[in-house]
Length: 388
Image 1 (cartoon, rainbow, N blue to C red):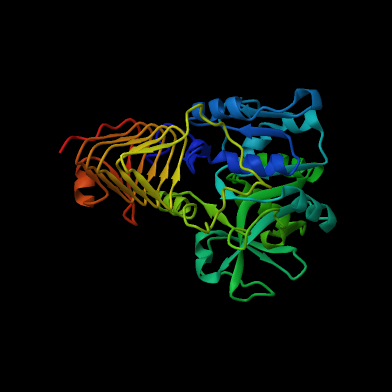
Image 2: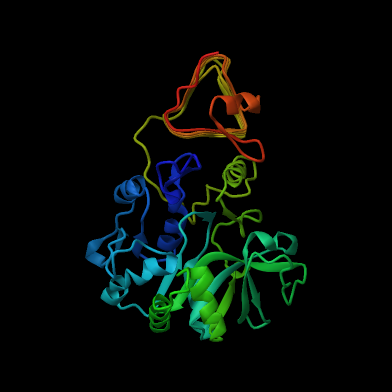
């Protein structure tokens, strides 16, 4: 919040021209997986619209991307959890009759060749494989932690433990779950049906389904560091970011804008696909400047300065304005002499001349703006900031 006030999290814009869901979708498509069902529930209109405009496959080749809302196929309830969402949509699996089912979250920033993970799952003989990323042990209390033996079999699946177990080959690190799973279909369907009958279950993939496979001795971990990503650089080869908070969302944008970015959007061998706006190229007039920034199509920087920031399409900056370490979503306008510092402006925000955002947090709060723990100010969609 407030970026998810009227949109599902996977539909939140990112990186100027993308939505969060474009990253997992690009990973799947680049890996050769082109039969995808997207299970939606709350505030899904902008997500549905984005998918329908962007992710079109060849029906001639039996390829599809389809959004699937909660249909109450098994009762009158909505999805009760991530596992229940799949249980209520088992007809999708039975219709396609696949050997394996890939279940990925839709709101993280990373690149992965999913085929390599599938091959590892097949070779392991496990019924469930969980993608794990290595993190320092001191960060373990922020994630679901995978405790695996030297052969990769998961011994325990721990939710945000205070003292996580180290890795056999790196005692100061632990495996954090990336929320990406691959299952052998028959075992997966049986487990979903068993879980659906358990009244005490939260019907959650990470909280119930994976631990059940662990208890059965049939769950393995896939080390993200073993994924050989085409075109990756030394810095971004193993990049993965959960953007579940405003601060993480802002930090992930800052990872994009340096000369050697932590996450490289310009990897031509593994492109991130999205719907591109039909706007002219960005224009700089009256000595307008941009330094270490991403400026999208349709933007006009008219005598203003942009520093370590991301401008989404059709933003306009007027003379003597300054935008620093900020993210402006589509259609924002910044007036003469205005200052935007360490802030996120949602779509179509209007900032009048000489106004300041992110400079005085007390003032930001008085005007009803959200200020994060790390001091990132967020201005909601369509806000007209009061004049000075």
